[in-house]
Amino acid sequence: MMAVLRSCLLVTMMLVFAGALSASVAQDVTLDASRDCYELGDSVSFTLTNNRDSTIYMPHDPTWTVFDAGADTLIYPSVYLWVIVTLAGNSAVTYTWTQTDYHSNSVPAGRYWVEVSYSPQMDPWAVTTVADTFDIKVNCPSTALEASSWGSIKRLYR
Image (cartoon, rainbow, N blue to C red; front, side, top):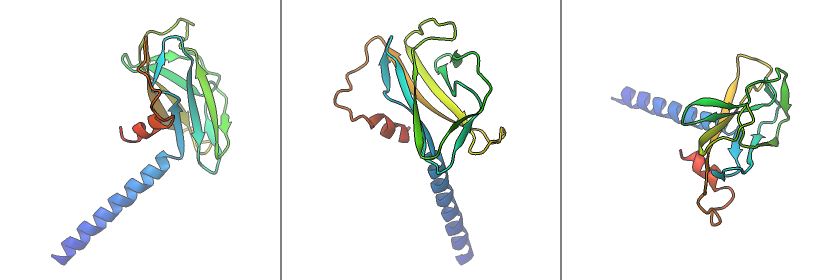
């Protein structure tokens, strides 16, 4: 009975440690849209933050990609410049998307996601992706009462 109890305790401790480890790794690099909802025609801003002490490497420029979440299709861009783009440790960069597809046409209202792929070392096989979702609507609900970090807090509990 005591051996079973020790085994259960060991497995529980391993699961807690693994959960804490994955949570800490997941927060090393983040991608956050500045709002959850943008009106048609507004510029969409999102920030890639590298909370690591070391540089991360992205395999192309532009470093970010936008997808239509409803259709699961690529919206922007259609062509990449295959160069290594770096982001130093403990720094951030903000990007802006003008709500156009790769043909320069305005996109319709809908749900979209933006993603960035990166590697903590220059290893093409060790690529990780971070992403965030947002809506484009004709009229967004008023967010005047929401704190600016509320979107980030909500994403932690999705």
